[in-house]
Amino acid sequence: MVDYIVVGGGSAGSALAGRLALADAGKVLVIEAGPRDSNPLIHIPAGFVKLLDTDLLYHYKTERQAALNGRSPVMPQGAVLGGGGSVNAAIYVRGQRRDYDDWARLGADGWGYSDVLPYFRRAEDNDRLSDAYHGTNGPLGVSDLRQITDLTRAFVRSAQEAGIPFTSDFNGARQRGVGFNQTTTRNGRRCSAAVGYLRPAMKTGNLEIRTNCHVTRILFEGDRATGVEYIRQGKVETVHADKEVILSGGAVQTPKLLMLSGVGPEDELRRHGIAVKHRLDGVGQNLQDHLEFPAIRYCTGRYGYYGEDTFFRSIRNGLQYLFFKSGPVMSNVTEACAFVNVDDMEAEPNIQMHFVPIVFMDSDQESVKRAGATVNPCVLRPESRGEIRLRSASPADHPIVDPRYLTAPEDMRLSVKALKLAREILAQSSFAAYVEKTEAYPGQAIEDDEALAAYVRSKGKTVYHPAGTCRIGHDDMAVVDPELRVRGLRNLRVVDNSIMPTLISGNTNATAIMIGEKASDLIRGLQPLAPSNA
Image (cartoon, rainbow, N blue to C red; front, side):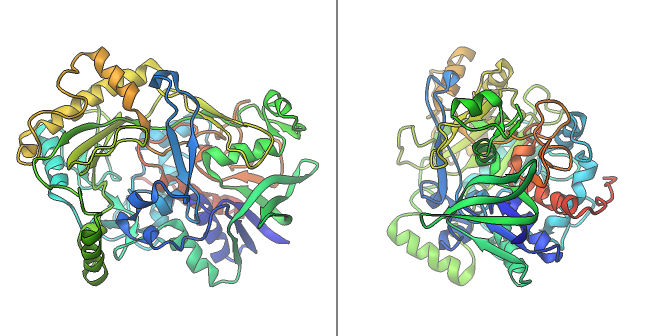
């Protein structure tokens, strides 16, 4: 018997479990389906590019997407202690003030921007910024990049030449601008929530972590969650919680587990022969994700990081990192971003652009072995909505993942305008010394809006940001209340990105950690941190 069971050791679950254990709130058990974060590539900034195709991620194949020419792109998600925070590009972005104020307007009381900013600050240990927007004493290391390639610097200059102002901070008073990313790193090493929160908490004696354990269902007594059943080394085991069961499996796994446990849409459960424990029609609905598509120019020489992973260069780069904490291994590869409004350059951004100083396309696309510069735009607040459904009643089967990308016309309209701007950036004078005059993708022949839309359909891929499938609210389709309690049930909460009513404007890892931070206070019944005036 423990006090709290946290199902999932990703970014939110690690932050939550670490805070509870460090606060001596009781005995905390984290159950994680993936392994420990012992792979050395996890802990070096550039390692994520080598991890994308490994079994440290789930590779969910989406349903055929009608708006992507019937393709079924893969949606990778972390499958290791630390979750996505152990295998992502470590970009530290929080989104915009409007994102959280929209949450509050939609029924997430206490989750407006002024309410959540204190939790972002409490989490943060920033190596450069200390002000009303940034903290310096938190568990999460946030650092400036120590390695930036000349090709990335060319992107930042070229974006300015295209009319996007420079910014030194995407997470301050205003998100708008182009600049270099801060990353969740400390002293040249990745700082996932598992590193920042769980490792210190292990010293308290209040925390236990069980990895390689697959939770198959939640146990109930009446309407009260009492524990979970899970499989460890092929054997079924159970564990009970004296206080609460907390689901932190993310926007794909959390709704799957609820439905396997009889909590969800009645028709969906009965279709698989699952007895209905509690009807909640919103479980698995409201799926949102960012969709990106590349504008690419090939380089005239060996610029960027092309070829840096060859055998001899890898040895040289590894030694440079080991002895001097410098060189390509120090890069998170996605070194810069731009946030811009393609309808009104002065307005709050509706597009994010990730810059990658290599040729970067999805795994279902052609393989290109050339140096290049890639600008990947995405619509920040997509209107398209999808769903997660069960494939079967077997816990071993991946669920049906159907994002329904680009089904909202506004998403395509903004995507075409964003692609035009990305091409314009790559054609600026600051890139001229590095890239060929002829565009590689989409290619000079693709000019009108219809052709650009067809290109987006052919190349669109996930930015790895699924959210929203167990959203906060008060209406009939809400899954959790503003305290993150599953509506209609006791001692059961959801603490992960599935609770988002709407997707935030940017990378989602920092927000997952904030959710874990705020949840730790809610669960302990503490007064929330004082709202910020920033």
